[in-house]
Structures are given as structure tokens and as C-alpha cells.
Image (cartoon, rainbow, N blue to C red; front, side, top):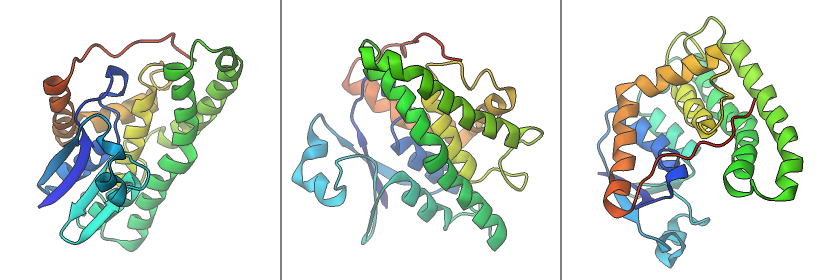
Length: 226
């Protein structure tokens, strides 16, 4: 049985964004059953967890003798077992993989910087100075994606792949802004991903423990950024 690690509870602003969602979604798309091992507060720094995840993060993927960390690496491993995520054709597969890397390397760092400013440092003077530049960088990334998706449902080859999965989870980090909503093709792409039954099941599975182990409030809405 496949086992993944996830947090028992996270603050409301992080609910639905923790990276085990990517792995849960991939496993649901691939039709692979799994179990979640939930980490309590502080347990991510335990010697046991650090032995399998040197940085104390989630998720960790365990299957037999194989242990993996980093959501991108885990997603590609699952994709190798399922044509629903990575096409069998070598060239189409390579194109799907490139979008996984694009989401992680070209898009997510800029989005994470802005999210960090808004969610953790909004009241600090340096954040107010840095934020316009961070927003401008995110907008450049999103404009490039919007151009790519103009007239397309999915990023490559007219079908959903692991690249769309990863990109959707990255774009969700901006849910406290209207940056995605302001770009119709991009918003539609995210909505198509989130409407997939596998996503809905994965999201419900991630959120369920948060209801059991801690209070859950509405996601805070900050001043929208354009």
C-alpha cells in the first residue's frame, strides 16, 4: 500500500494548499489507493521524519522499499505508472514533464514570494516596498501563461496531464488575490482542473483531518492585487 505523510492540521490560510494535495490528486487520477500518515504539531522535526524528509516538510511518499520526497519528483513517479498523467508517446510525455518543471521553477517561486509577503509580512515596512515589484513579476508569469492557454483547454496536446495538475496547484496559491480571475483563459484552466472528480476527492481527503483536529475558519481575503 502506498503511504503519504500529511499534516494533521494547518492554519486556515494554508488549508487546501499544502503540497500533499498534489500527490493525493495524482494518486486519485491514477486510480492508486493510498493511506495518509498524519503528522501532529512539531512532529515534522522528529528524527524519524527528518530521516525520510531532510527538510521536515510534507509530503513523503512510501511504497515498499521506495521512499521519495519533493512533490514534483513524486508526481513524476506516479505519472510513470499512469497514462492519465503522462502520455505513453515519448514526445508527448516530454512535453507534459516540461510543464511540471515550468510550474515549479518558472511560476511558483514568484507566486510564493508574493504569498509570503501577503500572508506573513503584510504589516512590515519592507513588505510594502517590495510588494509592487513582486506583483509585477507574478503578472509577467501569468500573462505568459494566459497567452499560452488562449484557445486551449490544457497546456499540451489537447489533454489533461501532470503539467496541468501541477500548474493548477501552483495557481491556487494566489486565491487571496484576483490575479488569476483577471485572466479569463487562466481562470478557466484552473477551474477545469479543480472540477475534476479526482481533484475534488483529493481536496476533501486533505481537509477532512483539519475538521477533526483543529478549528477551521474561512480563508482570509486580503486586499486584491492587480
